[in-house]
Image (cartoon, rainbow, N blue to C red; front, side, top):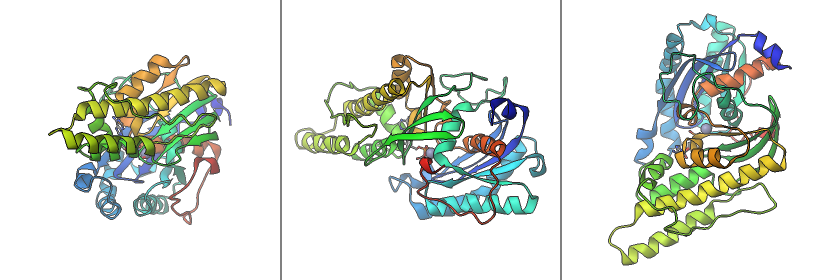
Length: 358
Ligand code: KG4
Ligand code: ZN
């Protein structure tokens, strides 16, 4: 599969995503151009539980998914017959959530005769770096990069950091991955969510910590950094425990917690390790460029630090494409479509599907 082959097809893919607590649908052309992207977040629904409540998530997906798919097609000014394939997240994710998106996609594929393509959610996050809105439709805040940005070049060192994953992956070419390492315990986003709860901040914890940290001193507390030298793995549970210990101690002596300083110091410890190891891996494996994706890549401090430190170009998706969305699923779906992947209606969800099995 060469890039020329891919550029010669202008396939439009309908993407569907429901792996966690976002119900999303999108239409993307040629793996890059977003014709529509609709995301219904359930964050408010789960906030009172301090995290995603799986049963509540799957029921909410059932309630909203057809409406979201309809909106995505309407916003793209297309009918189902105008798209070339349906791509849907099969995993990893919550089984009861994944099954809603997959069954919706199967129903649509059966009714329309369109090909069905099951997509790995981590691969979808990686392909979010190729996406763009057409010029002049800059409807959404686009973070550090503007319309029709250059596409990433291989070999790429990808850091995928989300609520469920912290993975360092060498991407040698389209759809070709070598897994270098991952978290041994909590994912980076999970650490943000758990520490936010400790500090009495709202779910989802990442944005709450970022906001709280803005008024704090990142050097106020010297929290541990687990470098796990000689491996490309991560560990965030020791850091979380260190914050817990500090909070317990402070609570004994102070009427109110110095939340801003705690948040800033915690965030700095996470960012140091993520950026440090990613840059070291890029160097060790001769990567031409770096890609950071997944919910935690929305973090301002992470974005600024890696842009300021890396010696090679860094791709980070615009903010709206960092957290879960279906445009990234449609984007990855395009490359799988061109590669010839066609799935049958017998495929099932794959809640623990590692990128290495692709
Ligand atoms: O990719 P994503 O939307 O869902 C998963 O696949 O897990 O990532 C969600 C995670 C949550 O843990 C959330 O707290 C974190 O991304 N997150 C952030 C920020 N925005 C979202 N973490 C740090 N800073 C942020 N600004
Ligand atoms: Zn995700």
